[in-house]
Structure formats: C-alpha cells, structure tokens
Image 1 (cartoon, rainbow, N blue to C red):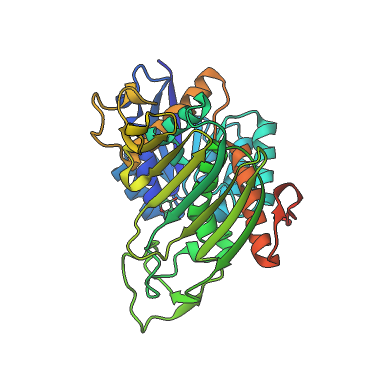
Image 2: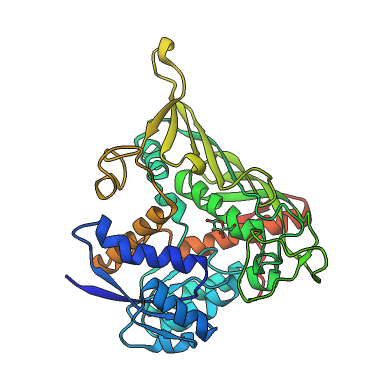
Amino acid sequence: MKTLNVGLIGAGFMAKAHSLAIAGMPMYFWPAPALTNRKMVADLNEESAKNAALRLGYEQYTANWKELVENPDIDIVDIVTPNDSHAEIAIAAAKAGKHIISEKPLARNAAEAKLMLDAVREAGVKHMVAFNYRRTPAVALAKKYIEEGAIGKVLNFRGTYLQDWSADPNSPLSWRFKKDVAGSGALGDIGTHVVDFARYLVGEISEVMATTQTWVKERPIQSGGVDKLGTVKSGADVPKGEVDVDDELSTLLRFENGAVGSIEATRNAWGRNNFLTFEIHGEKGSLYFNYERRDELQVYFADDPADRKGFRTVYTGPAHPYGDALWPIPALGIGYGDTKIIEIHDFVKSIVEDTEVSPNFEDGYQIALISDAILQSAEQEKWVKVNEVLVQTP
Ligand code: SOE
C-alpha cells in the first residue's frame, strides 16, 4: 500500500484536528486508499513547532514553512494557519508540485482565492478546502435524500451558524477580529460553512441581500502568542485594539435554480455553542439538521399517510453515508474529529485515484465570491449578483 507524507503548516487547534485525522484515517477506512505519514510540521515559533512534532507525532519540525514546502519527501501540504498566509503558502506549495488541503475560508477575499485556484490548476495538483461539516453523515444523508427526490424540488434553505465565544466584550482580540488577517469576521469564519451547505445541498447562489453588524468595536489585546477564543478573560485593564470585521451577518439568498433562502451567522449568540443548522423545505417534504445533535436528521415526508405525518428522526449509522467506515450501530456518536477523518480520506482517495474532490479550490473561490458579494451588499444596502461582484486586487 502506498504511503503519502504529509507536511502540516500551523500548530494551533486545527493542527490537532488535522493530525488526529491523518493518524486515524486508516483506522476507520480499510483498506485505506493510502497510508498517511505525519512527516513534518512547521510553525513560525520554533518552540511551538518542536512541541507540535512531539505532541502530534511528526518526524520532523521546522520554523520555516518554505523548507517544508520544498522538501521532496512531502506529498501533501496541509495548511492550518490564519487566513492571511493561505495564499502565499498554497501558491508556493502548488509550484513545488504538492497536493494541498487548506483550512477555510480559502482566502481573505475572492481575488486572493483566484490566485490560489490559478496556481493549483497550472500545477495540476489535487486541492481541497476544509469545509468539513458537509461530511457529517446526517448532512450527506440530506444530500442523498434531495438527490433521490425524497422532498421534491427544493424551495427554501434556512441556515444558521450561532456561537457565543465572542459575546463577552472582554474576550480577547483574536486574529479572527482583524480584517488584514481574517478578511472578514463571522462571515468568513463560520458563515462560509453555511454557504458551503447551501451550495452543496441546493445549488449555486446567484444573488444576495445582506446586513452586517459589529457589536463589540474593541477588545483586549492578547499576549502569550496563543490565539484565544473567548475562553480566557483578559480583564478590563488590558489595552484594547480595534475590531474591524463583522460580528454578525444576515443575508437573503437567491439560487440559480429558483430556490430562495437565508443565512445568519454570529459568534455573539449567548447560549449557542456550535449551532450550525439548516432547514430545507421542498415541494414534497422537509429536512432539518443541527450540528449540536449531529447524529440526527429530522425528516418530514408530505406523502406519509395522514395519521403518521410528522417530523421523524433518523439516527445515522451503518445504513448511511460513510456508515461502513464508522461504528457498527447508529447513534454511537459522530464527533468533530470524525468529520475530519472522512475529509482527509476523501482527499487522499482523490489523489490516489486521480479524481476530483469537493469542496476544492474552485468551491473555495466561489464561496469567496459569494462572501465578497455579501459584504458589498451590506455596504451598498442592495441585492448584489454574485457574478457581478467587484473583485478587489489582493
Ligand atoms: C471558531 O469560530 C471556529 O473554530 C471556526 O473557525 C471553525 O471553522 C468552526 O468549525 C468552529 O469554530
């Protein structure tokens, strides 16, 4: 069996998720499309790189990501750094002939995403953007039902992504609140996961009409080199820095196929943790999913006999997408790490079999165009067509 060497760039919490997936993939999927070896990890801080190698099981470490990208032993470059470095790393990795998986959002804006897409196309390498939630079995099951026509023509998609880790104004100024690093706020960080759901489940989005707000205009500057997501309070006496991205977005959607919908995303919704949901209404039924209950898909079929009509809960298991690789009975529990294992499996499979995988950089670019359209719509207070969005220079 072939072995692919992975080079991971970044050592934050996503490094843990990706490394678990790289290590765990053949434990779930057997025979695996290839074995995956944790070859090298890079972080700008040498001590973090060294610790990451030890903790996450990489053979080598470096404080210079270019060394990793140029290492002839590396087959896959896995990018888990903040958004402002995705483009530079991915373009260099493509030029070095590496297959690339990048964390989401692909880039800070559509212009940057386009450069990344051009680079991977030119190099002929495989590419993926890590919108992992579509690989939750219940979400893939919803897709299957829609494709089989179980709920008929889709009329409406309502998606939300609600968290509360930034609701406290004293939670620190993560890079996720800085436009030059993140590109946008709740939109890029979590709203794009819902945009991915909408495109995956319903189809291409043609037009948006949005509003955004920034509730907390400045936050305590964090120290210590570790990015904190509202878990540690910095205190009122700590100097503050400006937040220049959206805390909240709401947008109406029009799809190319005639469906309509909406997306709401915020990290300031007290009491909501990872409230990533969709409700889809079709001509013959409805589907509802909430990641906080991710083993379940709620389904309603309009053709059920009158005395049995009602939402029912399907608990995902062996009969459902990815079921063979997971646990032998339903409802034993899908975790965040499991979605990442499935993701890396599908990416490795596409490399070995030379097939297309989705979501890839094309999807990442399209989602970046939709995100830019959402920001332009909010600024101009009008509907914006995605194919007419003004693409800024990177
Ligand atoms: C923070 O909002 C965050 O870590 C996002 O960046 C991830 O994409 C999401 O899956 C969990 O929350």
